[in-house]
Structure formats: C-alpha cells, structure tokens
Amino acid sequence: MTSPPGVTLYTSPTPNGRKVSIALEEMGLPYKEEYIDILAGDQHKPEFLALNPNNKIPVLVDPDGPDGEELVLWESGAILWYLGEKTGQFLPATGKARALTHQWLMFQMASVGPMMGQFAHFFFYAKEKHGYSIDRYMNETLRLTSVMDAHLADSTWFTGAAYTIADMAVLPWVVDAVDSPQMPSRPHLKAWADRMRERPAVQRGLASMKDHVRPEIIEGGLEGFDDEHRSQLFGDAQYERNSAD
Ligand SMILES: N[C@@H](CCC(=O)N[C@@H](CS)C(=O)NCC(=O)O)C(=O)O
Image (cartoon, rainbow, N blue to C red; front, side):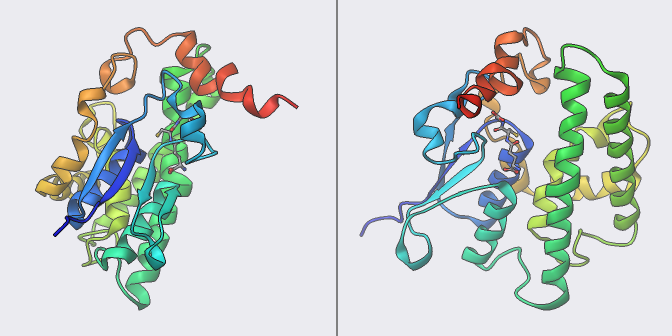
C-alpha cells in the first residue's frame, strides 16, 4: 500500500501563507511546505512563475485534484475554498451559512488583507514616509477591525455558530494587532482570536515557516531591510519582467 502523496504548499512566513497552513492543519490533510524566500526574489524565478505568473505566495499543488488530475492553485482565498470543497470541512454545504462564509472570506480578501497590507507597506517598509498614505491605511485598518469587533460581539465565529475557512483567513492578519498596545480596544475581536488560538491546529498553522523568519521582515524586527529587498518586493526586480516591452 502506498500512502497518499499529499499536497504541497509553496509559502513564506506571512499571513496569506499561514491562513492556508491553518486550514491544512485543521483539515488533517497530508501536506508538505516549500519555502519561497520573497525577499531574495524566489518568486521571480522561472520555476516559481510557472506555478504562479503573479509572483506571489501561497501556491497549492494538489497531485490528486479534480478528476484525478494535478491542480496548481494560487490566491489564498481560492485555495481555502478549494480545500473546503475537497475535504467537505469548514465550508457549509448549502444555504445561508455557505453564502455568509463566502461573504466574510471575500471581506478578508478584498478589504482586510489589502488595507492592512498597505498600512504595513507605508508604515514599515516604504523608504519615504508619506503621511497621507499612512493615515489612509491606518484609518481603514481601524475601521475594518471595528466592523469585525461589532460583528463578533454576538457571533462566536464569523459565520455564526459554524467555524469556517473565513475565520482561518482573518486570523493571521489580526493576531498581532489584537495584542498590540497601540491598537484601540477590540474586545470581541480579541476574544475570538483567543478562541482560535486555543485550537492546536491553529497553533501549528501560525507556526508555519517560523524557522524562515528573517530579521529583515516585521516579524523579525525589520533589522537590515534595504534597497535590495525593496527592489524584489516593490521596485526594479518586481517590475522589470512586465515592463520589458
Ligand atoms: N491576493 C493574494 C496576495 C498574495 C501576496 O500578497 N503574497 C505576498 C506575501 S503575503 C507575496 O508573495 N509577495 C511577493 C511579491 O509580491 O513579489 C493572496 O491572497 O494569495
């Protein structure tokens, strides 16, 4: 008997990577993780671009995809949805709960991730500090955390009584903010994050790629983040491939 080959997650120590690691842990799927060093430019190498032409982690490769064929999938929200359908777990099968899971997943993908990501960009990573941009994304971060806090005041999980992929999508984005003294109180969001953090699968998912936390990223203390890293993420190395013509 051979064991199932399992899926491969190409990832990095970031919220978009860890939301998928949490889901894989919760669902009990056999998987392995491959590290993509986005500060060193691994995402621009031909072998990675063959998986994701959008040069971003996470990417999931499932050798046993639909119809028994290999599936290569990128965009973390699409990956979570696929895994929910594949395993029949953490994605309500029908009706209102399924629609609301979709709503909160889209809310995370379209608002929480982009706005908090841009805040981190302008506040931590940008070379020139631009007040308007910092204020804009900080205000959005505060507004969005307030929307979530109000919703969770009378809802155990984002989709009411059902713990779903929407919860897994949001947690890595807010897990540090809810403990930060700089963050205004969001008691219901914090209580929800604490409920999630009690789950062993969530703890294992949040620990994904801890060994690859570099000093140059926020989690590592931002020591030594320089123009070469900026080039890979936001500058020449990021754009040269698409501006060649
Ligand atoms: N919408 C995408 C965003 C993915 C994303 O922004 N990934 C970042 C790390 S969190 C990345 O790989 N950045 C490298 C780059 O842009 O070159 C998703 O949710 O999968």
